[in-house]
Each structure stands twice: as structure tokens, then as C-alpha cells.
Length: 286
Image 1: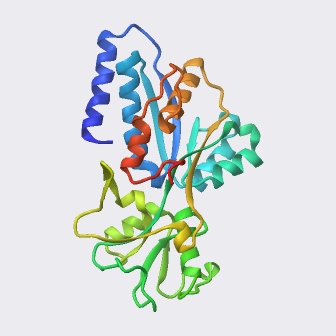
Image 2 (image 1 turned 45 degrees about the horizontal axis):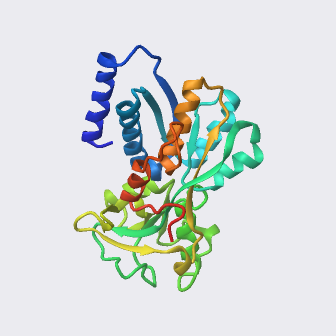
Image 3 (image 1 turned 135 degrees about the vertical axis):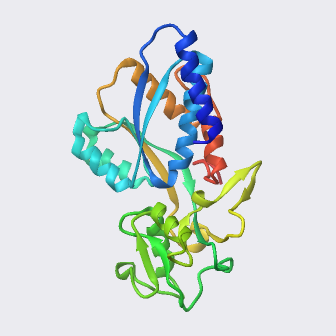
């Protein structure tokens, strides 16, 4: 969350105590996969500030970051008294599995909230021409068995001219980290010269103009052109027992995130604008 947004949320809480009528604060618990964590943090801050400023509502969001697989496992282990109200995954796989295999644990349907792409990224090596062939330098990708971005990278590596079977990774110069977040960290610490990461982790967009960290190198890979399954981010509500206020907050948060109509009959574009500022594309975008 930005310093400005932290200040806005802090002022919101202070003004609530001074001016707002007595009311119970509502809290929901949201679990977010690592690749969406920064965007989610900004969206949560904006969400709280917006609903206090416009309706005097004290909305709180308990925010947990983990791998999509671990969040899914925690939801299954927790049952109907589990730890989260909402699961925002880095793919549609885990929410879909919950809906299909553990229907009693979910509430409502799977929804899409963003799309992402894969970038080859480096702080030291010019990778603007793409992944070299033959491979002569150690590099890193997210674990293809745990992370959708890693699975996408493995699909690229499985094609010509590298022809590396996914089942054999890690191998040769190809190393792995558990997820997109730890992969980016390994590149930032220069443990590896370059690697495949989520575009949204390294790209920012303002007024439709994209930018990357100064001095860095990147090559964007597109699903249809470069041969990997499109990266679609999906979410699903969890079937916990909620108060009426919590249910309203959850509905408002999902609407805020996706650009749908909230419980006040209003479409608020702040959430979708924030998603696009991290170089995600919206589900309906070309």
C-alpha cells in the first residue's frame, strides 16, 4: 500500500471515531496469491477509504499472502469455519477445483478479475531478444508444479529450440523457486542472471504507457504467440458464516475489485483502474 493510501486509511479510521455514529466495524478475511499482492494491497486501501468517505462505513480487510496451492489447502483443512472469506488466486485452477470438488466450502461462482503475461527479466543481462539458444547461463523460473507462471515458462521451454520436458525441470541451466514472488527475489539479489516472472510484478502503467525499473531488461511473452496457456486470475467466495455487515462488505469488495454494481447500486472503477496500473489486463480486454 502506498504511503498516501496508508495515510488516507489512517485518517478514515480517525474520522470514524470522531464523527461517525456508533457502529460495529465489519471485517472480512482475504487470501491473495503472491503475484497479485501489491495490487491487492492498493485496492484494499482504496476500498476502505472509498466506503468510509461516501457511506461512513468502517470496512476492514485482513489480508493474507501465500501461494495459491497453500491457500487452497488451508481452505480445505479449515472447512466451513476456515480462515478466509475470499480467495483471490493467481489462476482459475484452484478456485475451480474448490467449486468442483469441495462445493460445500464455496459461496457463489468462480469469477475472473484479471489477466497477466509472462516476462523474461534481468537486472544485469540484456534479454530483450528473448531466451537464448543454446542455454549457457543459469536462470530461474517459478516451480511449474506449484505456480501458473512457472507452468507457462515450462511450456515455452518445452517447445523448440530448447525442447526441455517439463517433468525434467529443474535441469541443466534451468533452476526453480517455489513461486513468482521468490523467483523475482532471486533475480533481484542476482542469485540468477535472469528468469521468467509475472509481468505485473515488474511493470507499471500510467495513462496507457507502460514502464519498467530503470536499467532493467525484459522480454514480454504472449500466450497465443509464444505457446503457453493464458494466465487468468480467478477468485471465489468461501462459505463461512458471516454477519449481515460482513456479507455486505464482501459483496462490495468483490464489486469494487471487478467493476460490478455494489450493494449501493453504484459501479466504482477504482479497483479495475488499479489492476490496470499494474499492467494486468481486465478479463474482457482484447
